Length: 424
Image (cartoon, rainbow, N blue to C red; front, top):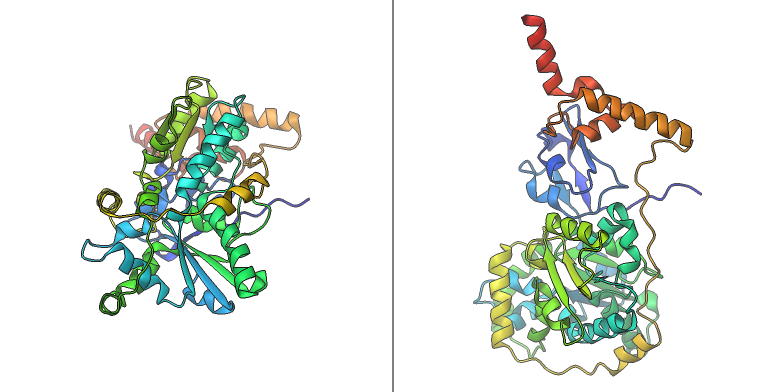
């Protein structure tokens, strides 16, 4: 069986890369190395968190998503919009107008993640109560966090919430409904997500735990925002009656999901920012947080409004969404069909397996010998973890040396010391 190939919605433009190592220092899974002043990404370790995209000042690491022309391959085209999308627009552009403008891009129907978030709350509560033996349950809505657990905290995989995320639940529901209503085959219906981060793009192309590919593509919020801006005035002059779901927009904001799930018999915690998430996952491994029933984990600052494919500052976007929730009126959604699908097990996902990263050697004796060599090199290295060598830490450099991917001469600090000693 061959090694699994991982899809990633991030690419490096070598011509733009200066080898500054800023990306190396912010990668939570030590997936990036700089050699010969060029960065490279270990696809086994990368979780598509987007930290490297945010920190690169030279636009050498760029996110990718599908081109809008992809929708032309389908007879009936549906867009499902992430809850964070509407926070990208200035307040003179209404929630309804922003949604209607997306329809003008060539879609036959526009749906929102916000339509099913209230149903999700009841589903999460039901799941928590039915799985009393697992504590805490960890949310699986953020694909970057799911992959982080696979790479760094595999012992916690059984604790994940093993049900589909809101946009995937909505996809299953819409595909079935549209197929019956329009008398179309599955292959004639194209369902596309408009997403705030590269992890969601990756999740569409390589879903973890899904029984099959649910969506047909993913579009960057920034790309759709740019196209929508060109037609906003036209839409404002020809407004339609568009149903919106402001109450469901809470899903975009960090902390709110945990507040909604929290009840007399369920204690919930919310965490955002990948460094904070890793700290919490370490504590969960140590059974330090067993008093919590449910923990919502988001790798981006302030939740999905902080995704690297968005255009607006996450704090501004969060403020705008809060205003929409406060001012808006939500139509009650009939969730009977969703409840039936849930009860039939249609939203269950396959239990996830750890993501294998680096084996020192398949032969256990050779692996032990390599571990000894790593420790030997580690005693020679300065222990500053400065990343100037192109590896994230001194331990990572020692590992890279033993694996033949680097040299002890890559350590700038040691080179300077040797140079100084020779000159004295």
